[in-house]
Image 1 (tube, protein in one colour):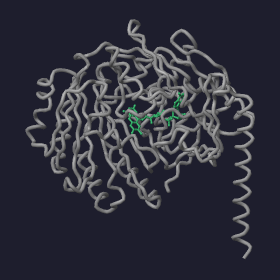
Image 2 (cartoon, protein in one colour):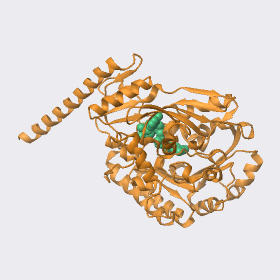
Image 3 (spheres, helix red, strand yellow):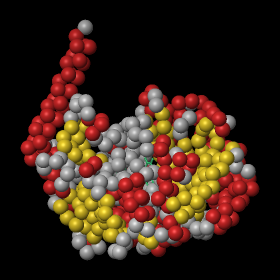
Image 4 (cartoon, helix red, strand yellow):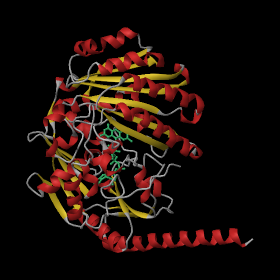
Amino acid sequence: MNFPLSIFTLLFVVTTVFAQLGLEAASYFRKHLSSTSEVYLPSESNYTLETTQRWNAFSAPTYVISVKPTTDLDIQNIIEYAYHNNISFLGTGGGHGYSATLDTVRNGIEIDLGHFNTVSIDPNANTMTVGGSAHFANITGPLYDAGKEFQVGSCSCVGIVGATLGGGVGPYGGLHGLQIDALQSVRLVTGTGALINVSATSHPDLWWGIRGAGFNFGIVTSATYQVYDFTNNGQAMSADLRFRASQNASLYEFARSFTGKLPDAFSIDIAIAYEEVFGGTYFFANFIYVGPMEDGIALIQPLLDLGPFDRNITMIPWKDIETSSKFGVDALACIKGNFHSVWGLNLYQIDVPTLINAVNYMDTVYAQYPGFRQAFLAIDMYASRVTESVPDDATAYPYRNAIARFLLDVGFTNSSLATAASQVGRDVRSIFIPTSGAKTDNIEVYVNYGHGDEGQLGWYTERKLPRLNALKNKYDPSKLFSHYNALEATYNVPKY
Ligand SMILES: Cc1cc2nc3c(=O)[nH]c(=O)nc-3n(C[C@H](O)[C@H](O)[C@H](O)COP(=O)(O)OP(=O)(O)OC[C@H]3O[C@@H](n4cnc5c(N)ncnc54)[C@H](O)[C@@H]3O)c2cc1C
């Protein structure tokens, strides 16, 4: 009879202790941070309204307090406080990181970079400087108005810096390479609390590491990038096509036919999803061609000949690529707070039978689990010529030679499906691994697409680790930045 009471008492004590931790931190930060900074406790009614929410509510970090600093010095102070009080912390940019490793932040301090969202463009110097939390949606309009373009990702709500630190891939990557290749410098508060500028000439050792493993060393308060004059007058063809699942072989054969010869201006994104009105499992595909419509149409003519059951082919300003393409799926991709189990893998070849197996598997999943009918399985293919023109040893990013990536998002609303969601993800990845073309036994994945269980060999590779680990010891010796696909961290990613 005492047992339930004991559990209750224990829970009460633990909750009270953490609430107290939050209150103490709040009191400290209110005294020691700049007057424009803000402090929010999870118990406050405006907490979710005022703080950046996470895209993935599954495996999410938990906080005793969220702090919204406004100066670099504030960030230094917060890190120092967390370190001295032995409280884990995490910086939040766009909040779209979904790795299962994030749940190693328990009762921590959130450094919500929401106020670091400035964007300034120098059209004469062809540069753009953004704050550490600016989203792609913040830059596309201003850049377009200035007659410039940039290599954006596929979702307007993702943090630019958050995406860049891992590499930064997207449909303009064929033309401009990775986002790290456009990066010119960052301002960073390191794990030792130092505020430093990092560029080719300032801390060049870290400059190498920040480009591909950047989450491991500190918090970027601002980043300066090269931007580019318009290609094709700032206009691109966006072709959205929908196909029946039975056309899978032809679609994937089309993608395979571009191996090693994808034009720089052409990108391919093919996904399977489920929609009752489209007869269940179906494909939606998007093709961006940054050039005249007739040339883009010529490229996709073999697919048009297949007879997609739906199409939307238009010329759009490049600034609308994220928001208008893929039948406007960006609006859904920006919704926060749902459960997602996300899995990815690099592909060095397109193996059509493997892709067909994966489609068949997902077809069964959709039938068996109505709760997974919002799941989608995508492959993206961006030309790698420009990306590969940067030598492998110029940056920490290890996968310049990947020709495509698969990404599976098992979205679900009922938490009782967590174990099954993990199983689906693991199964699909297992289907892809044998024919991915990887030359090692590691689970090679673009770190930003990682599920969280791949480990540092999978995110950073054996050949990069010695140099990266040395940087870790120098710039984050206490391993404070260890909660997101981190170097030297040991995770026990749950299988649920
Ligand atoms: C719907 C969706 C679409 C995506 N599309 C693409 C895509 O097209 N191309 C692509 O490359 N990736 C894409 N991603 C992956 C994305 O790049 C990563 O999830 C990225 O880490 C998200 O950054 P964020 O700032 O939004 O997320 P957060 O969760 O805020 O941050 C993720 C990690 O980065 C750290 N971080 C964020 N900002 C900073 C900073 N200023 N300084 C230091 N550390 C920081 C955080 O502490 C955390 O560890 C997509 C993700 C989603 C969910």
